[in-house]
Image 1 (cartoon, one colour):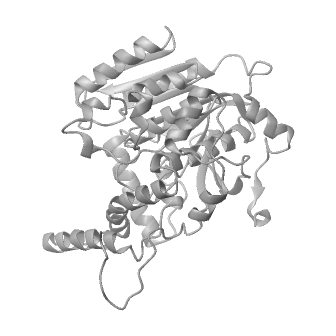
Image 2 (image 1 turned 180 degrees about the vertical axis):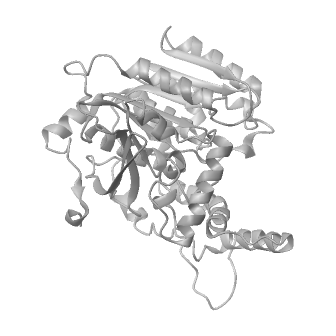
Image 3 (image 1 turned 90 degrees about the vertical axis):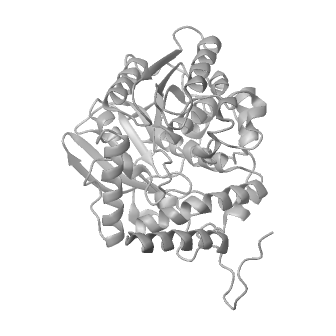
Length: 419
């Protein structure tokens, strides 16, 4: 037990910005999935029910290099407002296949989906925004071959939505006055920075706090009957429904794609929602048993949900999905996974998925979404989602019901109409 510091200061909130989260969880039923295998997964993660597609409010629109990007936002039932970006080819007409582009974890929570956007999108308005923009640029060079994955897909005739997930970017926790346990870790970082003569940016200070705070968030989630991964899945399911209802998107041709933690989120969505027809997982596939003894601390609570392995090995989650096709990319020198774990996962996927449903590719290099891997992912999504439009009756029952109730599709609402 940690009683914290004994002084006259009031104990700060451990869930800053999310003080309404406990009430939301007490009042919200669990997610009701559309298949028994998906329900088992939803129950293991503790995913709360996802509301009817929230209205996406249009905040701004800009066009560069043949891609139109709209910044949008919506309000879920708790916590800060979700910010997202909707990208599509400039001048596109008709309904396009949609892709939910899912950002990675990487221990950087000061920004979320912005790491998938072109440099210069949504110009900085403050010193903190400028620092976050530099973080994005450096990050893209290191992990995304200097590319905007979302804009790259949009330039190839996809409608792409990239959103901030639970605890990232616009959905991050307020840590200006961190809880005491987190504060102790932050003070240690500050001491190291001072000793090295480093002046950290606001983003770097926040990310140091958020990395330590994830343990507290996971603890809170467990007490509330959910999990860190379950709350991220809740936000992702809501975003998928937003994408399905946006103008110019064909809800019968939706895919998910992500690198690293985003790849794990892509797999979870494909297993939980029948809306997903094609799924890309890049650098996020292994077996649980291969993580022992040396690789456990390489991963966050996104992968380590207590009790989840009772449902089987991690690659077996794909067998719970109604998605038509999966692409899983492995980096042979990935620092986060042992090669034997990746090889075993590949063998499991080949054994459990029918021929034609699974493509596994092994790439040289470390933990990064290389240009070649991004090109392969785009080609796979095009092959899987282009062609004829949605066949009659192919939209899942849950989305059809929400549409009959008038919930989707909806045009963007101007910000002045959103309360």
